[in-house]
Image 1 (cartoon, rainbow, N blue to C red):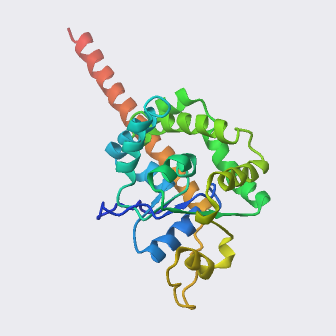
Image 2 (cartoon, rainbow, N blue to C red; image 1 turned 180 degrees about the vertical axis):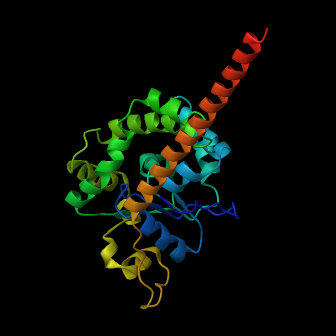
Image 3 (cartoon, helix red, strand yellow; image 1 turned 120 degrees about the vertical axis):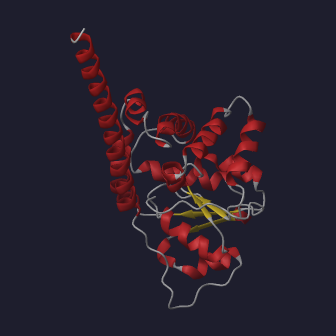
Length: 262
């Protein structure tokens, strides 16, 4: 989530792999691994949602605005947004799993699993950070390009999640998610793994050569990267509002001086 978002150069490429593991199950690690195995850019949801340009996020929100009321338009926008990527991972990818499977009928699905107690401890800070009134968050992020669209995205994601597995945050949430993925993916396109298994099983499933034995499997720290992004969002919003308030105060003081000088 803290890495640089991938921007595809060859938009003719299509999604070959959907990494459907829940956030904080090693989504950054599996993204790095897939980028190497497939030799192409990977759409990591956290990086894209938080770090792409404002126009990109506006297009994303136009896509989710069509959810439920204009499915063909939603699919068309989703196809444009994901064009050029070799794989997709992290939220909102798993929230859009049915749509992605429809758009990319040849894509394979990889479900990374993790000990549910460790996942719960890792996920808790994220759940707390989004448990704020959306109106307050909308005001806070209003002056921040890209991030000003975040409240609308979170509202949409919450509705999808409630319909999919419910909103109760507990260790059971990970089990519900994994079961939902298993039910919704054809068995011949599905692979479940633990990151500790390394390169070979994943490479075999994808039908590509594994890296040499001396190349370690990626082990990125999702939690540290997500925390860094959260701090940057809050710091940027605070500085933006400080600038706005300072400018307003200066304008008010100048107006007061002009008025009293009459």
